Image (cartoon, rainbow, N blue to C red; front, side, top):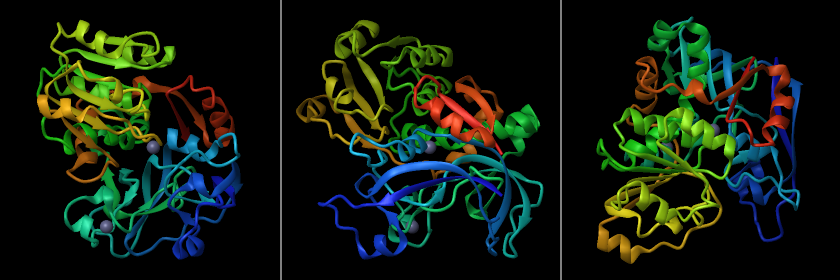
Length: 383
Ligand SMILES: [Zn+2]
Ligand SMILES: [Zn+2]
């Protein structure tokens, strides 16, 4: 079958000592410290083999994510930008939908012909974190398209327990569109997990501030509106992304390089400030760190954007105002995929607004090249 394969050279930086496990598996905990000269190619590879607890999917749609870009792109020193778990060589692709064409012997809850979206975080269910309910922090986690083969391919075999049916969505929008939306459940789930699972302080009527209008930020806008936000104020330095944020329903879009963050939030909220702040830009030192006077009493801050720098935060002020801050990672647990699919089926969240293009898998290289310019939001490949 055809597949988009990520390769790179094993060259650990002098101050990074790979563990025994990393040496053995080539699954590196900090990709940016080990992988040099990352590159992708469209290759002919063997079809996946089906295990008893797996289903075989014909991939119908697979999105290209910021993380895919960060695995493919290198910084000035030639090392991969992506800082977390990556194995090479590996098939990319973790935001996808597909149709089941074969069932493993032990699979009982799914049938041939079912269309599904699939969780990227392959939680084990037996480690202490999983048993405590924190599946996104699984101690034995594998990640589709990062540490194990992904879905930028004709077929993928996945464990049945990570699949969520798209039936409701197909009934509402038809199969073609449901498959596209299905490939956007994962990134929308990342936003949902931060918005509603990590803290339980959301209130309809919240003045909401969102930093970053990439796919996760755009999904956060859609979810905030669906959940009854009052003003939705979005900051992004890119003009095209600000336009997308507006199209998604943001009340105000601002360029943080041109305005004072605190002042503009206060001006737009009659001096009351932000109740709800979501970092989706991955530059907390330039976003959350710049907020103080504009945080309302009992404000909640959720940090989703994966960046390398830690912000210096006004924790004294957090205490005085009763501000809570939560980090958020992943998208599984608490029925997140189910609820995102329901929101899409009910028409409350329409992520098609952020779709820049759909292209055949054969055009993957072109699509990655085009995304280097950071002008598009989401491109979906159709194998
Ligand atoms: Zn992603
Ligand atoms: Zn686990």
